[in-house]
Image (cartoon, rainbow, N blue to C red):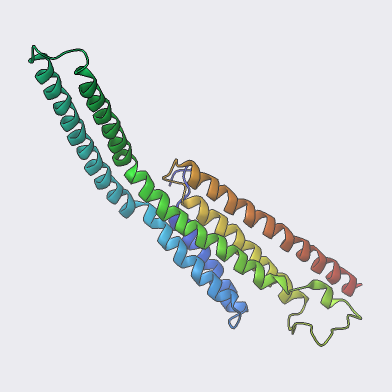
Length: 239
């Protein structure tokens, strides 16, 4: 395995290990299903690899062949029109205008067709990558929802819940593990997003990957603030 490339198999192995750790400590928590969903997304993102590359290879070959056909037809039409024009001795200066207009239109239509055909493979890859990145962004927000109500302040001595308070059943050790798992999941969401850019130079895809990575880092920083509070509570309680 090269050091210059992020391998989906290694990311998947890491997520599966994390899933096992979460299931062992919190088997009845929804966080287990989140890890399972992330495992499925990584398996799906690996399709950007071998199978998708083969599909893109065939798509590129077909688009390049059609480009050659368009070039041949456009060139043939222009050459035929010029041959007819130069072969007609009665063609006046004013009669050249329709020929020139037709030639320019043919060139424009050919250029548009060539551009469309040339970008088909990249647009297919972009569409698939953006769908996956949208799901990863949603998953990051779901992870944030799981940790949102896990407030370490509720572990302080003298905390008085209200009738509207969310039921809280975690002790300090369990809360620290739970928050740590959420942070690890967010980090792996960012790694999965990076997998989408391994075979793409598309600016839209790269910008979206950067957005997802920034989101996961920001959400994870909030979790680590809670983890630090839990550590302080542990120290206070041990004194």
